[in-house]
Amino acid sequence: MTDPQDPLTRIAQALERIAPPALPPTDWLAAPAYVWSGDSVLAVQELEAVPLDRLRGIDAQKATFVENARRHAAGLPAHDVLLWGSRGMGKSALVKAAVADIQAKSGGLALVQVGGEADALAGLPRLFMQLGDTDRRFLVFIDDIGFDGPEASSAARSLRSLLEGGAMARPANVRLAVTSNRRAIVERHMSEQDDPINPRDAIDDRMALADRFGLSLGFPACDQSAYLDIITGYAEAYGLAFDPEDALLWARQRGSRSGRIAWHYVTELAGRAGRSLD
Image (cartoon, rainbow, N blue to C red; front, side, top):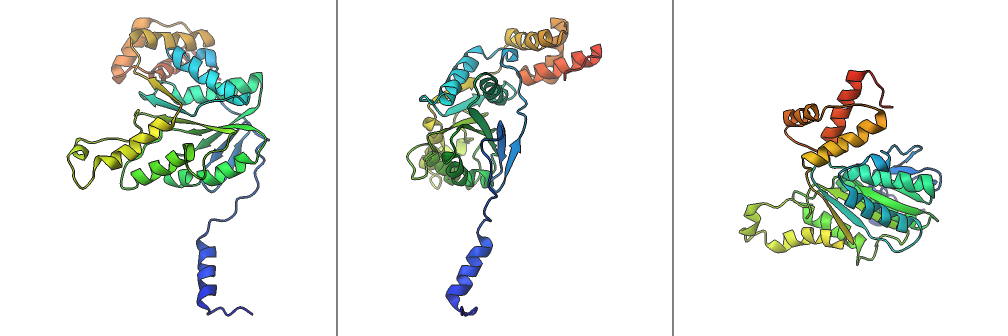
């Protein structure tokens, strides 16, 4: 009989209490998309995405990303992708739209969205183990990632090893799509260049993460022409007429032009016209 006062027994019991519980089995073939939180999986039975042809103003980025995703779905060599740039310019929308388009045409590719929180990222090795044992292609989507604070270098280094060179790298049937508002992913401050206690090596560790992506697609802020083109794409799809001057006034009142601002304007148009966007 095990002595409950035995030090080794007490240590083993303590480890059992702090160890994460085993995840319930997930059917990775049943749904078009999943949400991974680090300690749970939620199957999404319907992937809501904007049709690809409605995404305007990002034609070059769209063509490159879709082609890469289609190669991955077909089992051909494909890249992990970093989508970086201005807020509201369709980075996340493009990821979901590309997967939905592939599913509608050929199937074979599932989306797994991972939160950018530390717990979700720390659980990526467990996720990769499950996906690697499944006969299906997956695009793991990490939206709006950024590494700031005292744990930034460690977190970035962990993700970098999963992308390339680590003992627990992502499996062959998985590719990553990561969005960020910054090309180097991590925010930089002027003080970091002169602080001898925080040498540039630490910053380079985090910046080097961006180098691990085979594709890096930039999404700059849109100019006036692109902004109106984005609105036109949505307006035509919903049968809405609009005045370009009114659309530009809408943007000026909000201090920026972007795909998100364009969609907000189309929502306003539909409301004025008494039309549904469903």
